[in-house]
Image (cartoon, one colour):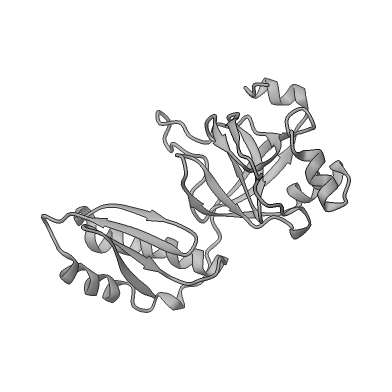
Length: 225
């Protein structure tokens, strides 16, 4: 574990160099341990694939005090076992209409469109991080046969609910925004609602499965084309 200065009141904790369920579990467990140990001394924590950004209150502590305290609190974290998060099923309308890159991705992989859809649904994905935008959950890992690099020219506007693939990650765009992921379908499930509790249907550490639905079901669930 490496702890580096990230700003005047923040530290970045690195738990490993590779993306894996084990490292992700350590990041997730570290969040709980630090919340219990420091409480309101912490302003925020931002977990990622293999790191954790810790932002603390400068009026209540300083780097010379909190860094060794963090090391002490997280001692023995290497012994943490992978815990199974909640299993969340998300509906997706896969089609050439809703997935403008579906055919190109299939051609690139020398597969049929139906094969790509089946492979995307067959995996159980882990939520490794939430970022870029509220509710944008980075899920991994997709079957290597349908892994694909980001588009060379990002789209200026990707619709809300678009399901995309970038390298071996997959994700759902929670709001309309620019983006360069390969789009293969649309999900009608809102990924972020500030008025709901919880505000997101998934959390870091959860497991996600996608379930294909038809066009009519997509529209009935509130999807928009």
